[in-house]
Image (cartoon, rainbow, N blue to C red; front, side, top):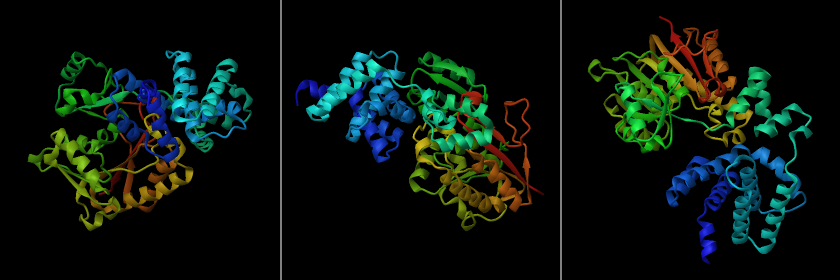
Length: 451
């Protein structure tokens, strides 16, 4: 292999193509694939950011990019990697303003030359030159409103129809505009830490910091990864989205409470619960997960955050709690249920293509089974907090309503958080949309067991 070929194989765009090939064609998880590539390659911070941008960007805008590319490859039989290379090039042309078009074209042709025969290099060259000369077609050609929105925002038609039926056209447009924007990095400051001192330390370390409007113990940071901060390593801060902090915030935990976190991994909410507990008052949180390797993850996170003394992590399917715990064992139970995750689309862009409407209703069954199983384990007068990171009502309010219909000994209470988020909120449940506060979509319901 000559020096030019070797250099191209180590380039950001070649690495992005390899990662995207595995994600789009083999179903690999984008975050894991990216982490693997970054761990193996010796990249500068700028190259790491470009790699992440290209990989997430192509996944995020895939339907749009395929619509733009289609006229230029009509009638041509392409190997899968060639199509991915062209989608990558299109993404950079349209969304990366600071990268010169000639650099994108030159690098793509070099990759085609290395990975394919001369005919492929010629095809890639011709297609890219045609795109630059002719430009891409408008969305105005699409007469059907759902098809147009699906193509413009790269979201499956079924999901657009579902959002429109649940939230109306105006809110759906707001959600669609937000989910293709980059997600910011938020951290939670440990309850015992001085937030002002944490802000100063982060700024001294080169981070840009601003306070969250969602909750007082969240900060929005940029500049580099929170995991690089000594404050992360010593357990003063942890990485967590602002919306995800609200479930525990709403639980109003007392220092001596017995708490069950029924679906706990990776342990962010378990640790947040633990910070409210006092071992001297008998406070304890029992964290469950169905997978043993995730129990280790919970324990490792608890150790880093110095909360392991009040956490008991156990491998157990939450639907089988009766095998382990007596009735009325807990003052508070958190069911942060497995869900479709549509509130996290900005962070996990492939979710939009992988999940279906049928998946959502299948998950509803699992969610209800978990709630049914834990219902007798909370004390009379105690609280079950039900939360998800999806914005689909069949996994949120519909689950709550079905649970209440079959459990008349529970009452839906208004979910209250430390910050007053909506002045005009009438719903007892709390729904956060990605367009509300520029945070992840999230849902919280508070279910009190009657005395």
